[in-house]
Length: 149
Image (cartoon, rainbow, N blue to C red; front, side, top):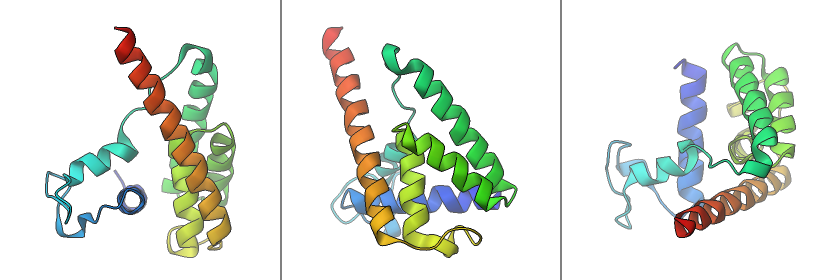
């Protein structure tokens, strides 16, 4: 994993933890606990866990995954404007990971994306809401599949 992707993942984990009320700054990703006793690696699972795929959404899901991968590849090469375009296209499909990256991108602006992105708290909130709704749908689908077993 290159340095830019490591920065993106670390910032995503911190943002996801903060969104869930966790502060893993004193813990570690290998199992340290936050102040509330939640395992920090549990918070990490929120961001990096694979998304469950529903049959009716499999084509959109696959397309969003390709856009996300293209965005990450562009970001790693330092092509920030191109990366943003891919993340936006994937986020507009409701892809949770892309929406999380967009929320983070607009929250941190040039600290994470030096070219082509300004910090914008309104857009950050919009994309955080999209990500939260997408994760809620994923959790509902996962629960339904477990209950059906």
